[in-house]
Length: 354
Image (cartoon, rainbow, N blue to C red; front, side):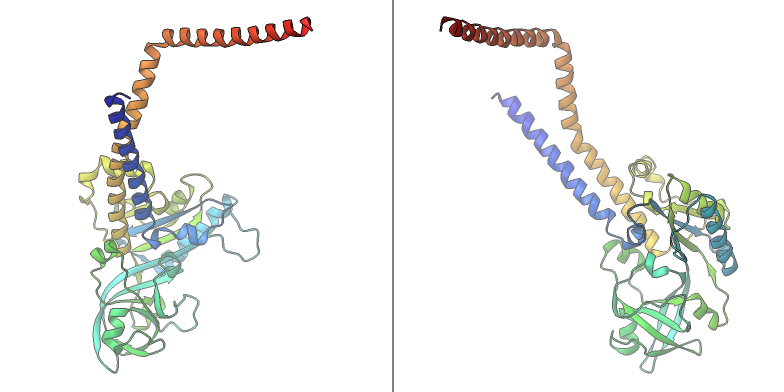
């Protein structure tokens, strides 16, 4: 075999290997954040679903009445599109809402600490399945709203241990009880944007116990999406925010080829913001993975250049030499036919001789 063909085969093999490796890396990146995988945890296999997030400026945050109004409107629009559950009292969609309220002082019998506080509502921990070390997730449906979820950093500062389910703490002169302790994320992207500072999650009703009025800058929903873009439209039309003061993300499409190409096209503009929306840490982490996934796509395309170029080259060569090819093909067919005919003729003559 000529040296040039050996080189060509080697280059194609290396290119395909690069493509395969980059594809595996892309799959790992896209599955690295549980916060972006709500559809897989909630939806069934028979229906298409989509996860949609709304982020607002602090001055345009949504109050609890706005959240309830949005819920009613979404439910109405789902019914209008015949997207209802066949089972009585079964939910066909879920939502969550939250907001970062800054630092609150948390005090125990052994010490105190400043904790970054995120107030939540709805099925927040379905969208954000934090890894629990001990205890349980509190729920919007709990009769008592004085439960909190804290990270392991805060747990050690308050009690010097992580197995402290049910232990009391004081926040703003009010008693709260630790529902559970969650493990700090080991994901490097989450670590970059969260800073691993002591963090506490609190139900919005618990925040009201402090005499505060909760406002929410993040609304998330997971709902049926039988037609591409329907879920996004339902949420966009239902949540009471202005387009100029908010960012709406269809999480389920953030790793699509269309979105990746859009990121590549506007790669240098990603850091330029024309609004005052402050993303929660999970969205900032997701945006980092989007950039990584788009960059990996570039290497995937590079890995395909030589194999595709090789195939196209031989197609062109074959097209240019098509007359020679068809002549060779016709002669080959004619030769095979003649051999078969001669064999048939000889066999027939032999039978006649007998």
